[in-house]
Length: 420
Image (tube, rainbow, N blue to C red; front, side, top):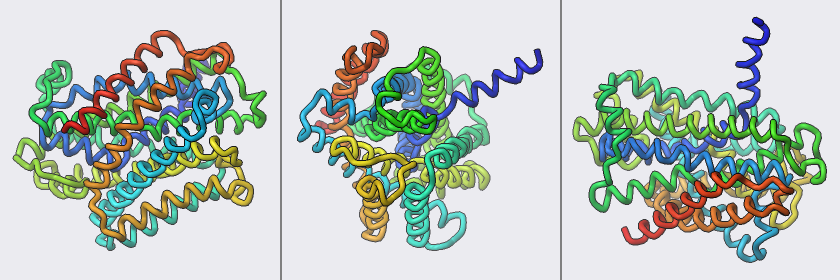
């Protein structure tokens, strides 16, 4: 009996993998800055968005995972069966541009946090982080990278601890979370659009599906024929994984908004443009420990997110052009695949040295993702609903309805982005 009781936690932990990594990667330094600014500007007024985005994000990531599991291909491999190559090349190029801008912003956020902790110039840290992440992504095997990313996800608990340090009144917090209040004014709607675009991001779609393929390869299923189809148990296990990962991601989002709402907003500190400004502003109101947790979280989430940002674009291009791909491939055998990874990280490093405004850069990332996300979601729906392409295992009707709603919501967000 004792052995059975112990096996449940072990089985649960073994079920966690690509879904948890993908969910945690969503809370990258750029996302943390977006959520922090939302809390600083609007207090607890947008806390309810964390509850709204969890089921939407969960349905989308679950559908992408299912595509990877039952087709044996990454997401672009499935889309290639439904859409002409020029359309997919345009989508992959837009993805690469948006991801590279995001990599640059994330590297800057990590470097600023490291400078706060060590007083070493941030440009030095950008180089160290960029070179280290690129080397690890190119040289280390998938199993090592996946294990490291899964454990790095734990760093996000820093934001939960920081929120408890502030000592919130939970009755007021519950009211703000459960009773949605519409955004106030143009800035409020723009922030809502930014939250949606940051939480349901195209790079996560590609990463989730491709990691399912990597997991299959790690089990020895190296041919497409052997990877096709998935057992009911495998699909159920991944649903748990994705559910936990997306819940964790939105839980952290909730506590980041809450922490900055109860400290910065409460004291009138609302004009912030970067995660470094947030970290510096937190100390007088939340204490040194909360600020330390916030900055450590920035570095850890960057180490988690940047491989997913650069890797997702590489997977997309590899599947369009039939390149050798995968983190277990030797660099000599997958030069083009790893060249995209290196290009994305290298351009991100160059952005920091060019002193590009990270806030403006993230705005353009939001614009690109705002246009790209609903188009990709429509494509994902088309693939996931095709019984032949999905080897007789299409997504459930409920999943298709939720992702359909998400597609409409993201399209509306894209239109609002241009209007605002």
